[in-house]
Amino acid sequence: MITFENVDVVYPNGFKGLSSVNLDIKQGEFVAIIGLSGAGKSTLIRAVNGLVPYTGGTLTVGDTVVDPRNKSKLRQLRARVGMIFQQFNNVGRISVLNNVLIGRSAATPTWRSLIGWYGAEDKEIAFQSLERVGIVDKAYNRASALSGGQQQRVAIARVLAQDPEVILADEPVASLDPPTARQVLGDLRRIQQDLGITCIVNMHHLDLARDYADRIIGMRGGEVVFDGPTAEATDSVIEEVYQRSLTAEDVAAVEVPVKLDELAPAADDDLHAATADPAAGGETGGKP
Ligand SMILES: Nc1ncnc2c1ncn2[C@@H]1O[C@H](COP(=O)(O)OP(=O)(O)OP(=O)(O)O)[C@@H](O)[C@H]1O
Image (tube, rainbow, N blue to C red; front, top):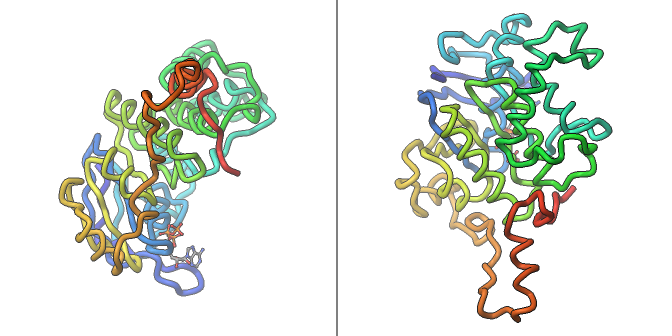
């Protein structure tokens, strides 16, 4: 599905961001990219949709060779390859529905998407996408009025509205508190499995990568230094990737779970609200 053959990225200042990367990512795989800051995780993800132009080797998505110099081919590629960012990239002053409809732009004549004229079928797709991420009741809210977890769900719905073959996610949960991060990643995982979408996700926390990914790719200095099934990404393997011992911060993105029997009975309702449907107010929002 996605193939890197000896792919290099040399940035305009001469810095080598990727060095001879060889990868074969299958359709429907959920792949986590891990590595310390500066390892080349974003560079690798962004090379797939041409946001970062690769400078050597060959990169293909399906049967399309990614050609960073060919703008019209890149546009066609990006219609098939959705991207989610750490900071959600929603338009805060417009409704959630209109944010999701932006995902229909590639399938809509430019003049119509510029004036926000989307057809009934596009709206149906947008509502279905919101349904998948559990926030259809927020369709007419301003995007900026939502919690961080809900805003990332809007971004996921926008990408789903594209009907993508691939979703690239660059630190999608790094701005969220740990429980919300798990809820959002869990949604992404469920949806990509249901729809057979290939997902490549950069992650900082090992426990998230291990809990949600099929496969882990470890990077260091622009090179792939580990590539294997999640079960093989043991602590010692990751220490080899990082070239240092693991810290608690590397591993855990979870808070210690609250034990129900330690709570006063009166608090049960609050706890239920905080752990149930995030749209019901259980999320604590994103950290700016
Ligand atoms: N536009 C650029 N010009 C020159 N060097 C760059 C550019 N973008 C990134 N780099 C360098 O390439 C290397 C890899 O960067 P990249 O953002 O891919 O790392 P990363 O693993 O995603 O790190 P982080 O976890 O901090 O986001 C870093 O040393 C970075 O400084």
